[in-house]
Image 1 (spheres, rainbow, N blue to C red):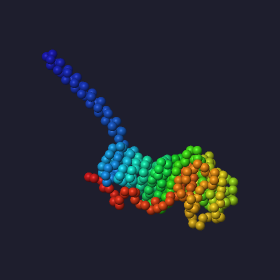
Image 2: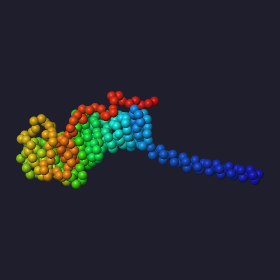
Image 3: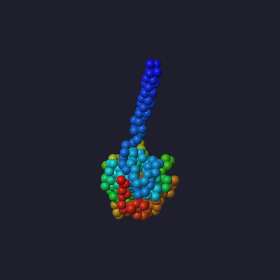
Image 4: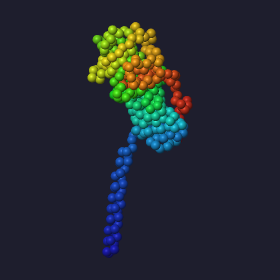
Length: 318
């Protein structure tokens, strides 16, 4: 009888130990589930690529914040919201449901009306769902944006508009060091609107409000102005920033021959006006919102494919 009671006691103790162990193990399951992000799409390639440092072949499911890295093959990213991204050769980006952070190489964006790309602190937003474009990191400090269809808006790290890029256009952007981020250099026709003086830059198609000595008498003329931004003053609604002009140079009397035409290629900043500002291209240099901008040289905007990208989209394996 005593042996039977001892057996029952041992069996009961063992059962309680097993239950306690299972409770502890099961209690960790919700944490594992919570750690996984929501699925935002799929990545497809004709070959191998990496997702979150793991090598995959053919295709992979993408979760929020996944890092996709390509090597010798291009990868196509199809998101659940309808956006399509293509990562070029030897490129890397962190992908989210509403944006991608381009960390290396280049990407193509299509069907992304509510989607944007970030690179070097800049935000590149398509204007409509029909917009498509190519975005590249050139070296360690420059971003290149080309609008293949539709148009893009480019914002600096403070959310200020620094460029409107229309179809067939391409611009290079280089965020400046904090010591020179307040400098501004733009070119266009001075206009008077409701008692305010404005200028729409010919390269970036961005309007700014200007004030300073010599500006008043240049109304109606095409000029290059150099000055500094004043964030304490609110510009007129159509302008992105308020510039206090220190130098003004007349380029021509009256507007340019062709509306929106850029100033002559190779034009350089006035001596001593923007010392230390790097010229990001051989085209006309603009400094707006703490970003140096220049029109790219060559046929970048006409290129509809990334290097290594064929005319057909990789298909998911089954």
